[in-house]
Image 1 (cartoon, rainbow, N blue to C red):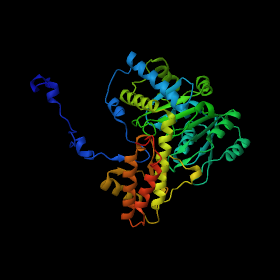
Image 2: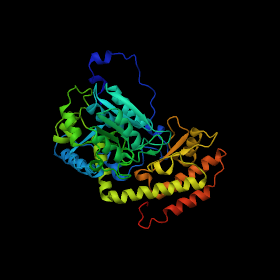
Image 3: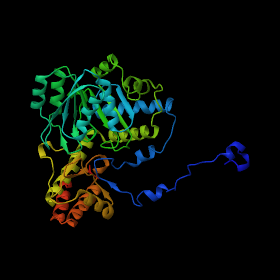
Image 4: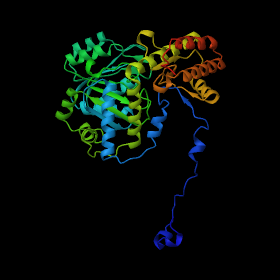
Length: 417
């Protein structure tokens, strides 16, 4: 630090009308005991991801080049695509949505948005924002848009782009006919944009086989990485549209052709979020080491056991079994029960955090990545049961815990360890 006498007279003579604010150390803000994050994301991260997130290297140069190449190879495995047009984004999954939409949509483009909830609807809102002509096709409450619904809409109008979410995080509903809808859209000459944020690596996603043109993922959900880094995978058809686009691109940072300079050719675009990219590298490495087959099995076993425990306890799930999203479970709140009070008590008494909702009378429990571990399941189910009981809901917590244990009893290979 410079001694006061070393400062110039001009600096010494300066007066500051705005003084430093009262300072609160971060340690005084954060909980003394870490919370178990069992909501719809972010989720707990493995130690390797946490360690990578504390490393800084140059965002350009041979070391980062090698990291980027690895991330792309591993992401291609996760998406099940042979495309090399995989681009990371400094921002949440919504930023990846913005990149997908703003590169494929422009004034005059006709977009069909298959809306099941908040996040699938957001894709349509973004398309409106760049001047596209958007039609919203909504499923009934708690149900996805069906293939028949989509086919009827495409008979009435030709669309350039069809958007959808594989898993609707806001209500725990899965687009069960997504592969067929994507193939239908492709047969009509439309490009498809798919939000796979809560499904990629938690359940099968076959980008090439299903005809997905842009797949979207965020780090903080099923990948068990950190928030703030997301990615888009572009098909050959989508990339051709990006390159031949006749209209100016509205976003400099989200211009896929500019981003490809860095992600494709290791040339400068903007300063990449280096720790986040390194964390994503480690999250994808762990996916590859586990293999998709084993990871899908772990997620399925964990979620089905948790669902059995919730229902045996006496709680009701929002989505029916045939369309239920395994990676985010939506639980109906009994009449008169306040979501905020349930969540507040779970946090204070048990150090477990779950999610509220976007207008629906539900709470949400995540079953993604590191959430799908047996010790996390037992702690969460017990905390929920006791918190609901405290609000006067008649539940059989012991029966729920027994059902969870029974659901995991077949885990002879310790998938959910």
